[in-house]
Image 1 (tube, helix red, strand yellow):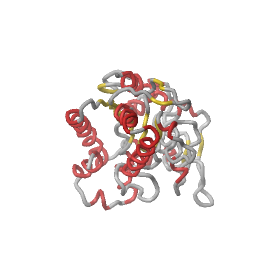
Image 2 (cartoon, helix red, strand yellow):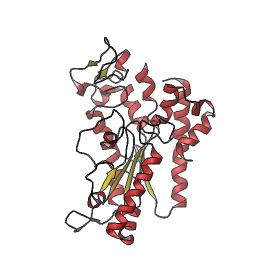
Image 3 (tube, helix red, strand yellow):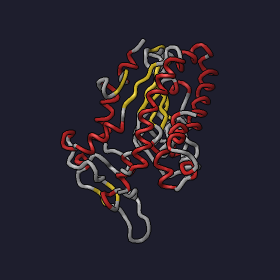
Length: 299
């Protein structure tokens, strides 16, 4: 049942933008390419947790991690990933084990200072005012209190706890998710009124995932609840890739493409591709009011 609990904590993926930009490439030529700055948790971590005292690894050539030592300013003009596996919007979530959202934003400020010294104030302002910012955050904040018996959750009402996460398969978790999904769009609409030129795309990851869990065959999967890798009921215990104790290990499926989930909380490549296509070019009822492709095309 562990993995079933995890499922309901996936909330929203949010993309923010003010438009397209002109970036300077490695040959100092101006190109009409939008920069993409990525924040969040394990869904977007391209390797930042390799540079902290944590167990997570990512070996794919993605948007470069911010903490990668050989990053140069020219590479930052195309974007960079600040995401950290296990991260939350709250500093208390997995404290000391991850790079929380506040620290990610501080790292972003460091990149801005670095680019300002390289490109000058005017060009740097244009880069950051027109870039696209991609976030997936909040799931770990709702999972952590139940997994760690956290006082952060126990000492606050559900509504106040949701407010903390947004900005400043059991009922309690379902109530939290429902509150979050009702409140968060209001926050974005308020920002749109307050910030001139602010545009955003919001993908309801929770709904997209729930549809695939409940009707896996409709989306080309044979299994929508049991993970490909792990141990225990539904392979929902997070032991994939390592052993805990002398007799415990993990099971691995034969055909990963049959599965929606790879492990206790992460989707398979096939499932991620489906979600990515919805974020990139999905209809307004899935990703709204713009999809990511439309954000990049805005002038």
